[in-house]
Structure formats: structure tokens, C-alpha cells
Amino acid sequence: MYVKNTKEILDKANEGYYGVGAFNINNLEFLQAIIDGAVEKSSPVIIETSEGAMSYAGDGDFRRGARLFAEMVKEFAQDLPITVALHLDHGHDVEHVVAAVQAGYSSVMIDASAKPFEENVKITSEVVKIAHAAGISVEAELGKLVGIEDNVSVSERDATLVDPNQAKNFVERTGVDFLAPAIGTSHGAFKFKGEAKLDFERLKKVKEFTGMPLVLHGASTVLPRFVEEANNYGAKIKGAKGVPYDVLKEAVKYGINKVNTDTDLRVAFLAELRKALHDDASQIDPRKLFKPAMKAIKEVVMERIDVLGSAGQC
Ligand code: G3H
Ligand code: 13P
Ligand code: ZN
Image 1: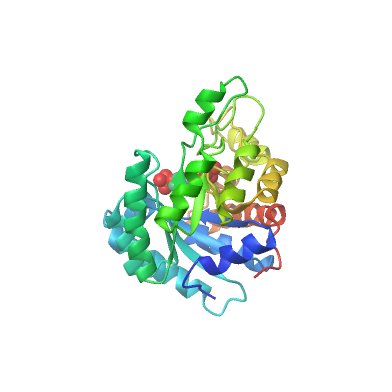
Image 2: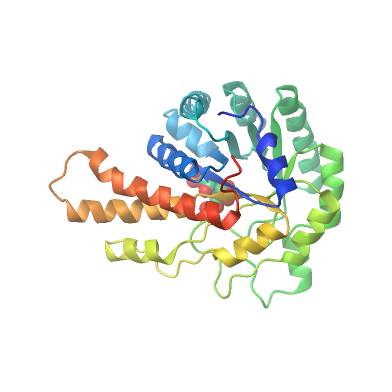
């Protein structure tokens, strides 16, 4: 079933203390594989598209891309025994937000975290008005998404990561539905130089002060088995490191309910695609080459559902 408002999924996760995977897509193959994994685990799932994904799908026209994604996700979700939401990831301007709202997305993210606090409040409040009028929910972000090393000073941490008091103020003033607090993760395959550590004390405070569903960006685990396989078949992604499963579990325990994952899907898909191209060099049907790559995505999704505790919560 397609849910009109992502709040339906995340309020339940907040009450039940579990996390729901939010998986980025750019095409049909990723969507099919993610949904397959979620159905097999009877788990709710959030599909998300970046602004770049919308432009890619619409061949340069992000509004068209948003409509294509919304139609595709709705078509896949109907008659399914699980709840499926569609979310705009890292919307940076009102134009992209409006495109997603008009296309029928279930929620949008407005990411004005790089702007001064008061400007972030203003833009987010504006987006909340637009989205709530359409009956959908809004995610916003506070702090910078960067990995934090052990030797970083307290003042540097304070300048980079979310300020829990500011989070409370932000939520009260904007009316936002979900908050993404920066607690030490970053996007991509190279998140930490040393040990993967997140600022859980900060996370606990944000949860205590806001009580709302919280979102972890840059949450990919960067699974060593797929990195190794990709490198064995010609990739050059040495030194990649993500958020291990036990750290993710802790993050969920302390209040994370939406777990954004893109890199893990990319790495798994490309590792298996590289292998398939190598093993079956005479194959000219892309669909046959995509099959094992889609299976790898399904595997990643199912593993994450187990880690986040959303299996059976459809
Ligand atoms: O957070 C960013 C997501 O991984 C999407 O990335 O802008 O390359 O589509 P993208
Ligand atoms: P990863 O790069 O860790 O997959 O993070 C994705 C993300 O945060 C999308 O918004
Ligand atoms: Zn993100």
C-alpha cells in the first residue's frame, strides 16, 4: 500500500522504538529490488529520490522526473501487503519541494542546514506550510554532516554537530515533523578514518528535547564483502568505511527512526554488476546482467531491516 503521508510510518516507528530504512533510487531496478526485500521481511519501507535523481529520471526536467517516480512507486506499492512511502531527499529549494508535493510524494526534506540558523527556520517554516497544506510531512536537518575524529575539540564538535537546545527551538518554531540531527556521520563510502563513533549523548538529548522521529543520514554500513568484491573486479574503492551494524542498532535504541541508505545499494549493485560482466562476457542482454546486481540490493535491504528492527511492522 502506498501511504499518502510518511508520518504514518515514522510515528509508529517512534512509538515502537525501531528504525525504518529509507533507500535512495534513481531507476526501476533499484526500486524493484528494494520493494522485493521489504515484502520478504514484511517491513514498511521509504523510497527516496534526491534532486539529482529527479533530474536524471526526467532527462534534465526534475518536475517530470518527480512525476515519473511517483507514478512508478505508486504502481509498485498498490496491492502490496506492506506500507511504502516516497520521500524527497535533501530538497535544497522550494521549487523542488513543490515539484515533489505536486507529483504526490508522501514527504519532503528541506535541507537548509548549510544556511544560518534563522534562515533555516524561515525556509523550513515556509516548506512546512506548503507540505502540510497538501497533507504530507517534512524533514529538516541541523548541523553539518561530517565524520568526527576522536581528537576533535569540544568547541569544534559544538560548531559542527547538532545543538540539542537549538533543535528544540527549531522544532517548536518550524512545526517540522522529522529531524535529521548531525551526530558524526557523513555521506558516501569514506565516513571514518579511525573507529566509527557517533555522538550518542547528543542524540539522546535531541530525542529527549523533541520526542519526534529522528533521521540518520550517511547511515550506510559500506559492507566489506561488497567493497572487496568490487575491488576484485576492477573497482578502486580502497579504505572505504561505514557505520557498522552494532553502531546502527545503538542509534536506533537512542531514537533514530529513519535510516538513510544510498551508498550500500550503489556498492552492492556495482560489485555484482562488475562480476556479472566479467563472468558472462558474451552476454548482451542488460536485464540478465542486472539480475544478480538486483539480488545484492535485495540482500542489503533485508539485512538492514533485521538490524533496524522493522521486520513484521508492515
Ligand atoms: O544524500 C545523498 C544521496 O546519496 C543522493 O545522492 O545527489 O548523488 O543522488 P545524489
Ligand atoms: P549514505 O551515503 O551513507 O548511503 O547516506 C545516504 C543519505 O544520507 C541520503 O540522504
Ligand atoms: Zn543524506
